[in-house]
Length: 278
Image (cartoon, helix red, strand yellow):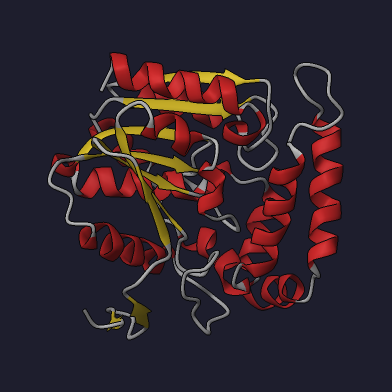
């Protein structure tokens, strides 16, 4: 297989991706959000693999240990095309269950929309599906390509870590702990932010609004969100559930990453959904 391929924008996209595979059984493909990595699923993968599922989790283009483009303005189509090349390379023999967080939720939805016959079900965690979900400040930040890339590219990892820690403390824990996120998750989050290609932050500015397509995505779907999400509009998730014909929803007392802050409860909810609905 060639290591690169050229897309319709005349951008050379790598055809390889860093990923992990664990377990045997029905395939479950996990897609992280912006400035994250496959380690988002470190708590979920062991639970699914011991329950009879084959787990696949990748680092998206520009993230983690996957290739990075020399571009200050990534486009969502590039991330989707890179993801599509990767999932095709897996040569799965049956439809997959896709688990996507935030930007990864957008990619999962787009895959289900285009390849419904190869999508067995969706688990969407605080999913992005429209720029209208973003607060005005984030919309402006993502839209200013040069400024956001310049700023993010110069922030050291320790500063990312400080922001993660402050946010984790501010959110608190549902059972009274000081932090909403465990120490190992906070450390990984800071590392992932620091190694994300700065141009990735432009990608949300290029998403197509998937709202008109939600009613046509008829696979079994579980939508999970944090009721204190500060990144995407909380009210948008309920609207999504109502728009999708086979969707159910569940909110946690959490922020934007309930799969990490409420991992045990989230994992049990996922397993129940897979047993009962997929």
